[in-house]
Image 1 (cartoon, rainbow over the protein chains, first blue to last red):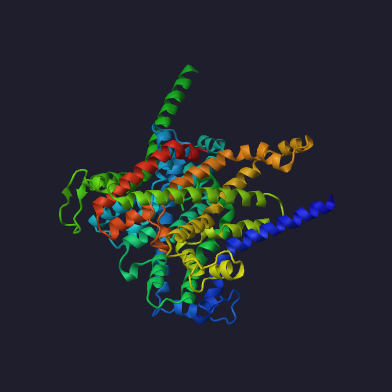
Image 2: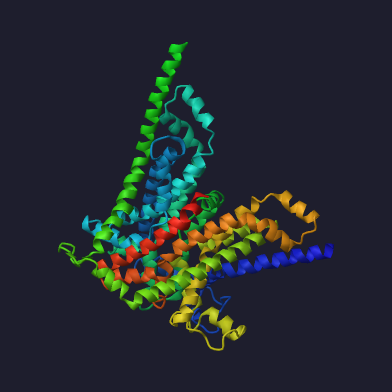
Length: 279
Length: 299
C-alpha cells in the first residue's frame, strides 16, 4: 500500500514536471537564443544548450542606432500608464456606484458593462479608425489609450465592484451615522481599504495595454510614436533580421509584465477567475 | 414621537434621492466612455456598411445600399473564412479547456513547490503575444527549427519536415497549438478555483462507500465543475471567434474572419466592405453573447 502511494507520488511529480517543461520550453528557447551567437541560432541540428554565450544581441537592441528600444519602451509605458490611470479612476467610481448606491437603471448598467466587455478588438477597429482619423487623433497615443480603455474598463469595474461588495456595509453605515457624508465615506474608508484590489486592477489593465498589438499597429504610423509590440514586428520584418536580436528584444518586452505580474499574481488570479480576461 | 419619525422619513427620502444622484454621477464617466468608444462606433459602422467609402477622408462617401452585403455574401473567400474560423474556434476551445482541466486536476493535489509551479504555468498567458509568437515562429522554422528537429530527426513522427508557416493545413495546426498553449492557463485557473471549492466531506463519504477515484471524479467532481467549464467555453468561443493578433503575425495561410476583415479594411482599403464584415461578425458574436455569454458572466 505504501509502495503504491510512493509510486503515485513519483508519477504525479513526473507529470507536473512534464507539463512545466512543455509549457516553459518556448521561454527557454527565447532566453537561450538571446544569448546565442547569430551563427549558432541557425545551426542544424539546433543547439538546445548554447555552446557560446554572447551579450552582443542585448547591446544591439539597446543601441538606438540599431533599434530605438528606449523610445518604444517609453511609448508603451506612457500608453499603458495612462490607460491604467484612467481605467482605475473611472472604473472605481462606476464600481462603487454599481455595488453600493441604488439608482434607477442600475441592474441594466451592471449587465451591459459586462456584455460590452465581449465586444472589442477587431470588431471595433474599422469604425474606430474612421472616427479617430476624422477627429485628427490619427497617429496619436490617445487613439490607442481610448481603444485600450474599451478592452479594460469593464474588467476593471468587475474586479473592483467584486471587491467593494466584500467591504461590510455596516462599516460605512456606522461612519455615516458619525456624520461623514457618502463622499467622505468613499474617500476616507472605502478607498484606503481597497488599496490591494485597486493596485492589482491597475497592474492588470497596465498589462493588457502593454501587451496590445492591434490598436497601436493600426493607429500609430510615425516611427517616434510606435510601441514595443509594433517595434518588435518591424524588427522581424526588416530584411536582415537576426534571431538573437529578436529574442533579446522579445525578452526585454516580456520582462516588465512578467515581473509586475508575479508581484501581484495572488490578487490578479482572484480577479481573473472572477471577471474573466481578454486574450 | 410621531413628528420625529416623520422627519426621519423625509430625511431618508432626501438622502435616497441624493444617493441615487451620486450613483448616476459616478457611473456617468463610464457611460460616456462606453457610448463614445463602443456604441457610437457600432452605429457609425452600420452607416459605413451602406457606403462606398472614399479613401480620402475629406471626400464624401457614396450611399450604395446593400451592395457591400451583396458582395460579401457572394464572395467565396467569406465562406472559406467562416469555415476556417469555425474549425479554429472548435479545436482551440475544446483543446484549451480540456488541457486546462487536466492540468488543474494535476495541480489540485498538494505537493512541494506547487505555488511556484502555478505561477510558472501562467507565464504563457501573461507574456505579450508579439514576443511569444516570434519564439514560436523560430521554433517552427522549416530549416533549423527545434520542433522539426525533435519531431523528424529524434522522434520520427514525421517523415518529412512540415512547412509549418506556409502549408495551409500545417499552419492551421500551428496557430491552433499556439492558442491552446497561450490560453489554457485561463481555463486551468478557473477550474482550479472551482476544484478547491468542492466540499471535501463528499469525497470522504464516497471513499467509505468504496467508490474508485475514476467514479468519484465523474460522480462528485465533474458535476461541481460544470458551471465554470461552461462559462470558460462560452467566453473563449466568443473571444476566439474574432481572433486576430497572433494569427496575423504567424502566417498568411489561415484566413480567419478577423484577418479577412483586417485585410479588407487596411490592405484592400475597402472600408465599406470591411464595415459590412464587421456587422456580420457582430451579429454572430451578439447572438453568442445573448445565448451563452450573459449567463456565463453572471456566474
